[in-house]
Image 1 (tube, helix red, strand yellow):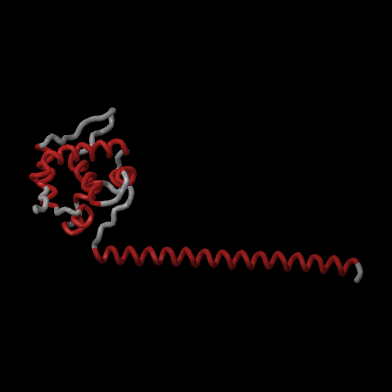
Image 2: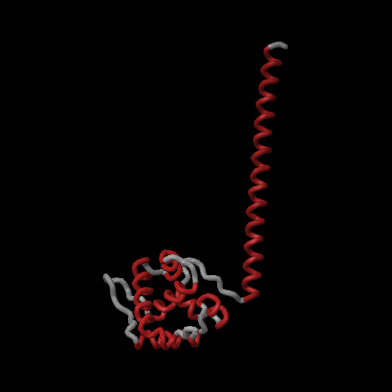
Length: 166
C-alpha cells in the first residue's frame, strides 16, 4: 500500500472513530433526556395523587402559618392532636406564662409557633435541626421554645394529659 492510500485510510479511520463518538454521545444524551422525562413524569404523577387526596406534605422551609391552615385530619396526622385540643393547650400555655420574647435582636417566635414546634417534636422523631428547618427558626431558638413549652407542660400536665390508672 502506497503512502497516499495509507494516509486516506488513516483519515477515514479517524473520521469513523469521531463519528462513533458522536453517535455514542447522542445515545447517552437521549438516555439522559429519557431519564429526566421519566423522573418529571413520576413527580407529576405523585403530585397529582397527593393533590387528589388533598394532603399537605410538610417539607423544609415550610412557613409555619401553613400548619395552622391544615384541615383537621391533616393537622391531627402531623401533630397527633386535634385542632380544638391544640387551641385549648395554647390557651393553657399562655395562662401558664408562655409568651413571645425578644432574643438578641431577632424577631420573637410567636406562641402558636412555639407550641407547634413542641408538638412536632413530641409527635415525630425529628432533631432540633430538622424542626428548625421546617419552622424557619434557628436551632437554639427551637431548642429554647421546646424547653419553655415542656417546662410549663410539666406544671399543668395533669390538667391536660390523662394517665391510665391502676
